[in-house]
Image 1 (cartoon, rainbow, N blue to C red):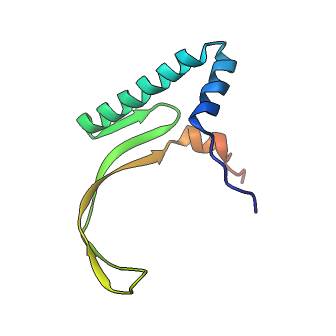
Image 2: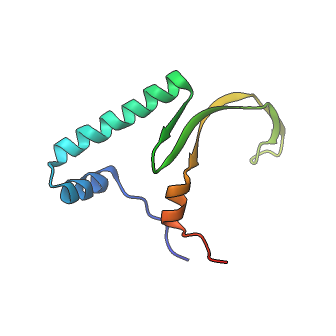
Length: 101
């Protein structure tokens, strides 16, 4: 089984800087501003669609029962608000092309 590896921020910045012929500092500034924009918009409007990528949205979970794995004791998990992401069709198709029937 292949080992799972994620790109580090430095690797992403380096790759984008190379492909865009930009400085690493400019790419890093752009990524920070881009992330800040996403955070602010999702917080303000409760959802944000990133074209070609997917949709960030705020959802509420219900109160539920769980089990402490260390002790086996039953616990109550409170309701909470979470941020979710749904992958867009363009992204899905680019990564895993649809099968032909």
